[in-house]
Image (cartoon, rainbow, N blue to C red; front, top):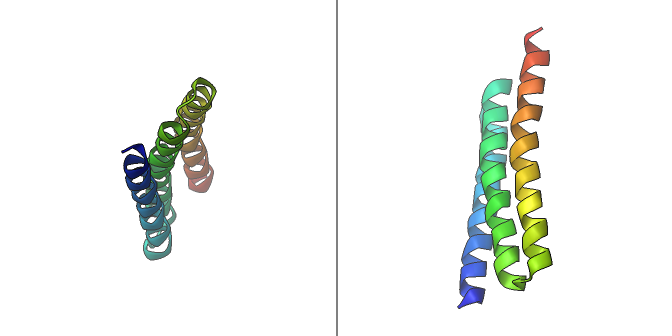
Amino acid sequence: MTTIITAILLFSGALFILVSAIGLIRFDNLFSRMHATTKATSFGILLMVLAEGIFFNSGVVWLKAVLVIFFIYITAPLASHSIAQSEKE
């Protein structure tokens, strides 16, 4: 059962990252591209890291997974905001 859940989470995460890449190519201005890459990629990584935690099901792996998710959700919006502010000036 855990392999099915892991597979679903991995494929869903890969789909979100693919949508993010398509948005990066299709959108015309910088701000739309940043929105697509920041939001969809962060959620895709969240799903893939959750799949990793479920598959290995170890305390150390869950700790690392939570730290990776925390780091991604803190740094991605800050980096996007910094790029947007530098583009405005």
